[in-house]
Length: 113
Image 1 (tube, rainbow, N blue to C red):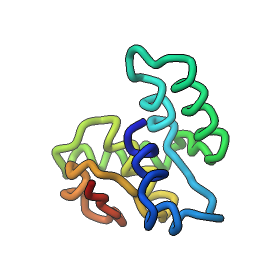
Image 2 (image 1 turned 180 degrees about the horizontal axis):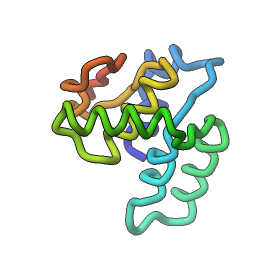
Image 3 (image 1 turned 45 degrees about the horizontal axis):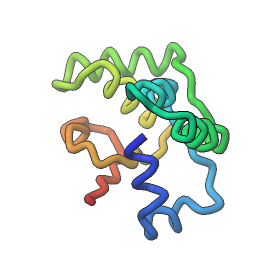
Image 4 (image 1 turned 90 degrees about the vertical axis):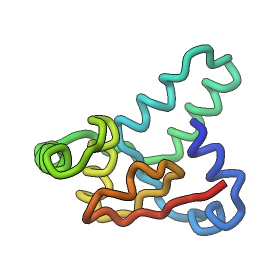
């Protein structure tokens, strides 16, 4: 949830994303709900955010890219799936997680807060 909360609070990123379709990996959707102890308001905020995004489910091509990334990079499985989704969709990945920097072929927009 931190990534998208930060995105919405960061003027330049919010302006960039304004009027654009926002895609998120199915893994990102699950991670957003994975934080323990979310209150009802936070859950509703996440639901609202997700309702305004297109969810990219895992398909055979994303699985193959994920396998390749796992073999070529030291990245955890969820991050490999997120990166593979970005690569497959040929869309930039907005994140503040510096762990994505070492993934070749990824159009990374590294956010610094």
